[in-house]
Length: 593
Image 1 (cartoon, rainbow, N blue to C red):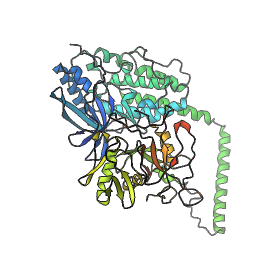
Image 2: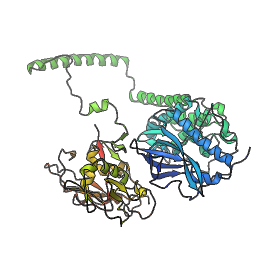
Image 3: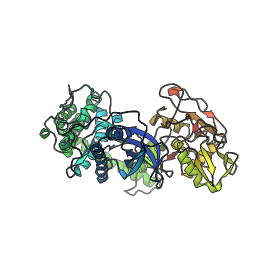
Image 4: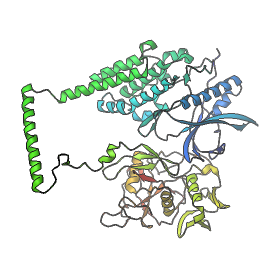
């Protein structure tokens, strides 16, 4: 066997420019990830109007392997196998694949083939976000929630994968994506099945060392399900103990230093067995690991119940039953008596207490963490709070691409003159003459287009409050008010990188509109960037919102001008509904059905 040379990360140019369209239907919005195995882009599927993720073999990989045709074939074989592996599994805790193909890229005067996968786009955090950096060992209640709500779901996903004869071989928190509250296993680049031949004969170590089983180091191609169980044991260990020290010796069994409660003692035994250096001593299936975790949780639940309900003497139980029976008879007699005196029916199945408001929704279960809106954007749930109900929100401002799709869908009802787009007397967006970088929208041959397609993924600007509201109405959504916008910023804070009725039932007044500034995690000037780096950039640091109705009357008012500058958030500003600004974008929300 020969040793393959390592793939080094470099600053090589991306395979595609933002705004490129692959095979006529995948519009690349922005590059969201890059590593040794491939590049990942957020894209928009034009024919189905939905956001997707596209993974390609990276320019970096091509450069490193170009001189060795055998290694290029190996890389493409592994990439194609990822498609085959992922396409076989349909499970709520496994990332869904949509399509596979290949295109040619011009490099150095010749065509280089590039393979791609399109898959479910998950814009949220990774599984690491659900874990504590210092561990849950001192917060057992939080540990129980994490086990029930998150870890057992991950086990369900891995069990589904193993059910198809597939071994992942690179399980770690960063390869599990969070779709709201639902973990989804992703990144199958190192996966294999028992039916498929090994792709490479090279002597190279693939995987992530802290989660890698000993046999995966000694013979990667033969690593089986036990290697995934070892990685799951390491993830469980991290959740309780805290993030592993990079200097910690890999390929070793781990355990808790000082388990002080029965639950921690049980979990310590589970971790030590799952991470045993001898694979035959580990759990032999994920189902077996699941049963052990569930048994530990059940034992804790029984222990708490027993402590909370000490058993009284038998005689006391007998008298308690007699008293309860007498009271029940007396209550029924009084109920019938008062029912007859007040002229009410006294049918035995009549309910004495009405169900609390909202219980019907609760009976139907929790609302889904995400929702696909009519404009093709994935909206995420913002849970209810004391001052407002739950609602769905865009995670980022509406882009040039999505706003142009909206304009073109209603183009026959619009007028364009002197660089201004109007619907009747309402100004929706200012176009400009193209002399400024942000003046990207043009009207040509009866349709709205971009001067430079690389701006497609950036937040649309120069849209008025009226134009933002029109977009929201068209897709059966609305603009957030200040309370909702603040909740969005709390639930999904942005990273500063590089008429519809309001809830009061009032019709918005075109002059009662606000702009709010976005928070800056670094504490400086607030900035929101799409992450696309090219040419001159325009930072969008404000968004249009709807002013909340005054509780004393039915008119919308802008009497919410002061807002503490906590977290770098500026007070809202009042502006005219027909104004458009270079640094103002907007997002939409949708109330629950």
